[in-house]
Image (cartoon, rainbow, N blue to C red; front, side, top):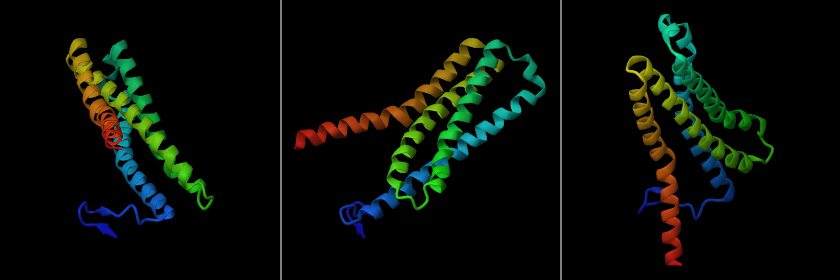
Amino acid sequence: MTDTSHGEPDRERESHKERVDRELAELLQGLRVAVTGVQVLFAFLLTVPFQQGFGKVDAAGLWLFFIALMGAALASVCFITPAAQHRVFFRTGLKERMIKRANSLGIAGAALLLIAMTAAVAMVAEVVLNAWPATLFGAVVALTAGWFWLLQPITDIYRTKGTLEEKS
């Protein structure tokens, strides 16, 4: 069942169960990609304190490190929760509730990953270059990821809603 004009499934013909199953599969696939990235960052951050030069990190660098570590840990929790809940909710009829919750957790996880990446980049820049470049490079990461991951899609939603309201 494909609509040849768009190459996407014909959503008008899919049953409620098919829609929920498709939405769950799409959501879990997206979370799989995100969880891999956050786990690599988290694993890296867990090794940093055991590196020889870590003792040279100043107070600002230590705060950035802990912000990055906590952001990565909490993003991991957000991205892994839907898979864990999927097992708990198995055959309970609560799949739609889980999908809505998983979507919210995915957004929260993206925001926490954004914080972790920003702090990690700023920490490295602070150690290697000094304070003002750390702020600059951290801001570049925060603004770029914030725009592409969160603000651009939200802008598209509002623009689409406005266009749809004008047509009706």
